[in-house]
Structure formats: structure tokens, C-alpha cells
Image 1 (tube, rainbow, N blue to C red):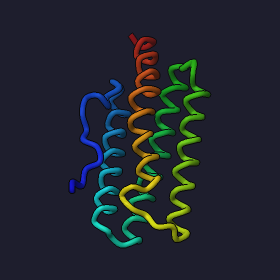
Image 2: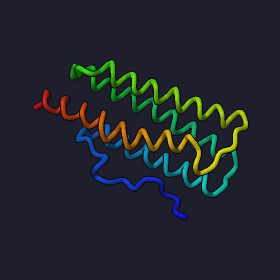
Image 3: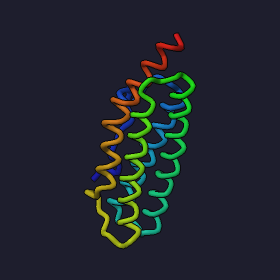
Length: 137
């Protein structure tokens, strides 16, 4: 069984260097969590991975929101709401785990993260990046 949930590829690029870099870091974090899950590692290691993902995600969303505000992105409120909903969902999954729920490689946490990568980066973030880049050009 592989320890990689996602292989980084160009389909994840949105064309804004600092955001692309952070997306790559977050995908690396998700893959690290996946490795811990399939390796049946200690709860303390899983908790650490989840915490790192959460902190990186918060920082990433803050940067993304800064970029959107700076370039007066017209769908800012909608995009910010997606961030808030994702963090709420991820927090709920983390709390269930921390309160004793079993965690496995088919856990809702991975499904939540997978949805963020597939749906949010490749649709919402790309849409935002195209509009921001059009204003810069």
C-alpha cells in the first residue's frame, strides 16, 4: 500500500507562486497524515499531523484572502465562506478523533481533505487566480 494520497502535478497549479507553494506544502502534509494512518502510528503522531495541517491551512487561507482583497476579487465573500466551511468541517473531524473516535485510512478527515484538494484548489482557487491575474496583466 502506498503512503501517498496525492501526487503533486501541474493540474494543482493556479499560477500564483506563493499560493502554489503553499498548496504543495499542504498536499505534502496530507500525504504525511495518510502515511501515519496506514502505518497505524500512535495517536500522538496523528494528532501532531492534524494540528500541522490545521495551522498551515489557516495561514494559507489568510494569505489567499489577503491576495483576493488586494486585487478586489469580486467573489471574495463566497470564497472566504468556502474556507470557513472547510475549517469548520475539518475541526469537527479533528475533535471527533481527539475525543476517541477511531481513525482509519478511510476516515472522514481524508475525505474532507481530498474534497478540498480536488474541488477547492482546482475550481475555486483557479477561478480566483485567473481573475486576479487578469487584473494584474
